Length: 351
Length: 250
Ligand SMILES: Cc1ncc(C[n+]2csc(CCOP(=O)(O)OP(=O)(O)O)c2C)c(N)n1
Image (tube, rainbow over all chains, first blue to last red; front, side, top):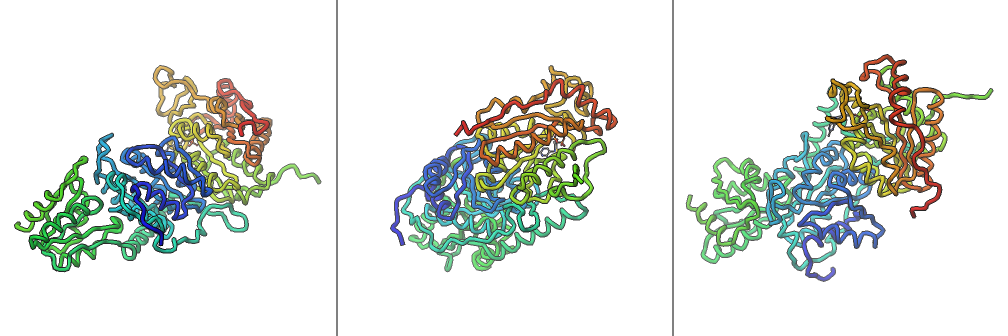
C-alpha cells in the first residue's frame, strides 16, 4: 500500500479517473472544478490519454458519448450552469445505455449564482435532470479519499450497468486538502463491452440510439430501463452509519454536512446525548431499506443539507411511518457550524 | 458484359422513408457506393443527427450512434479520438448543422478533427414539417416564414461550405447537387474524396449536398429538380472551396 499524501479533493478525483483507466477527458472551464481539467491536461498525455478542451459543456457531454460509445472510459466535469447544459446529452446516454462519468463540483444557484459550497443540485442529479424517465447513478463523496475511491467506483458502476454515473461534491470537498492514499483498494473492475461501436467487420451492425418509434417500443424500452434501475437499487447501495447503535436521534446528511454533523454528534455525546449519523454515499441508488431499518428503532430524525430540502423527501419516503422528521438546511453557499447542528439536534430531540 | 450499375453492398435492401421526389436517397446511395469502393464498410461508424437522416441505421449495414440534434460533430470527435483507426462520419441536415449545431460543427472543423461530415441542404427543416432553416432562400415561403423569408426579420441564408473552408483545420470542403445525372456523378467523386481525406489523416472533410424537398416546398418532384437548378445553385454555388494536398497543417 502506498503512503498517504496531502491531496486536494479535485486532484484526488482526477487521479482516480486515470487509475480507473479513463483515458479521455472532455471539458470546459468553470469554477470550482478547474483543478480537474488542469490536472488531466497535464497528466493524461503521459499515459497515452487524450484531453480535449471542448467548446462548451454541450460539446463535452457529446464527446463523452461518442468516445464511450466506442467502448473506452471517458469523462467530463463541470459545475452548475455547465451541468445544466449537459442534461440533453445525459438523457440521450441514459436512453441509449451509453456509460460515462460526469462530475459536478456544485456551485450555488440558481443562475450564475456563486462558487461557495452547496448541495443545490441534488434533485437535478438524483431525479433525472434531463427529459424522460431515467436515472443517473449518483455518488456523493465526503472526503478527499472518497473523491479518489468513488471516482473509480463511478467508472465501474457506469460500465457494469451501461448507465451514466454522476459524482456530486460541493466546492469544499473539491477544494480542501486531506491525507489521501492515491491507490485503489482493489483491482479496478473492467467489463467486456460487446455492445460497443467498433465497426461491423465480421459481425452484424450495432446501433446505439434512444429513438423508439414503433408501437409499444418506447414503453418496452422504458420498462427495461426501470428493471435495470431496480437491480442497481438492490445491489449497489452504499451508506455509512456513525454511532447509530444506541442512538436516540439519527442525523441524515451527505457530503460536507455529514462531516460537520459528526463533529456536532461528538460534542453532544460528551454531554451524554445519544445522537448518530446516517450518511448515504450512493444517492441513487438511495439507501432506502437501511434507513427504514434504522427508523424502526430510532424515531427522531434530523435531515441536514446545504439546500432547502432536496434529499428530505427521499429520506421521508424511506422511513417508518411513525418517525418524526426535522430539517435543517443552509442554501446558497451557507455552511452550518457544528454548534448550529448540535442545537438543531437538541431541538429535534425535544419535539 | 460490362456491368455499369449494381445495388451497393453497403446499402440495405429496404424501402426508405423518404418522400417521393426527395433526393436524399441518392445521397445515401452515393455514400454506400463510396464505402464499397474504398472497402471500408466494416471499419466505418456513422453518426447521424436528428432530421430526415435519423434512420441512417436502417439503411447502412454499419455501426451507428444516434447523436442529439446538432451534436453529431462532437460525438464524432469523441469517437475518433478514442478510435483513430476507424472511419467516422457525421451526417447532418441544415437545421441540425447550420442552426442548433453551429458551435459543434465550427469547432470540430477548426480543430481539424479527422472526420467526414455529410451535410444535406434542403433549405428547410424537413422532418418537422418544413419550417424555415438558416439555409432557406430569401423570399422562400415555409410554414414559419409564410410571407417569404425576409432578411430584415430572418437574416440571410448561410453558406456553410464556404464558411467552413475558411478554417485552418479543414482539409476538404465542397458543395455538390443531386438533381441531374451529371451532378450525381460529381457528387459521387466528391464523397469518395472526402472519405479519402480521412483515410489519409488529412483532417476535417465536409460535403454539402443540395437536395430536394418537394413535399415541404409544395412542388412536384420534377419541379423540385428545377428549383435546385434555378434557385438554389445561384445562391449556393457548386464547387470545391478547399482541398488540402499535403499534410501542411501538421
Ligand atoms: C433539441 C431539439 N430541438 C428540436 C428538435 C426537433 N427536430 C427534429 S428534426 C428537426 C429539424 C431537422 O431539420 P434538418 O436538420 O434541416 O434536417 P431535415 O429533416 O431537413 O433532413 C428538429 C427541429 C430536436 N429533435 N431536438
